[in-house]
Image 1 (tube, rainbow, N blue to C red):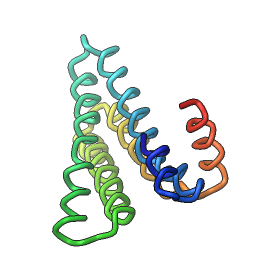
Image 2 (cartoon, rainbow, N blue to C red):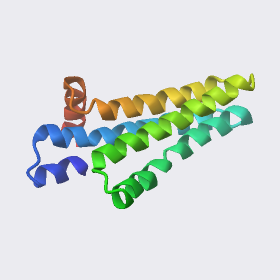
Image 3 (cartoon, rainbow, N blue to C red):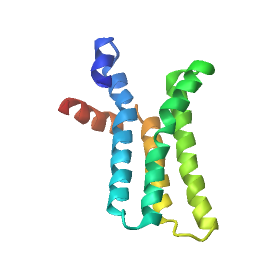
Image 4 (cartoon, rainbow, N blue to C red):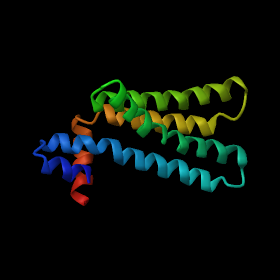
Length: 140
């Protein structure tokens, strides 16, 4: 939808492809973390941490809109800040488990996928994302 909306507003193709760098990675991150939570239903420790990871994704839309509306930030900057904050929360949870000498692997996965999501957003105008995003856009 984002891709076609941007094209209908006469946005350049590269901008239309760049904008889907927000939705596609978020969908993949949610799918990965939710699938891991389901696979670990019987292991409460792991299940809980993966579900926390999925919940962290819900911070983004509200925080992003607050930055745009109340602080009058341009949307790309607000999104960058939001994705960075969410990734930092994932890293903080990882550090907390490391310090408390708990099994850190679930939050390591959460921190990694959230960080990759933020990096994809920052790389949305690069040739690799334009290629991947272009292939995704052609599918739909």
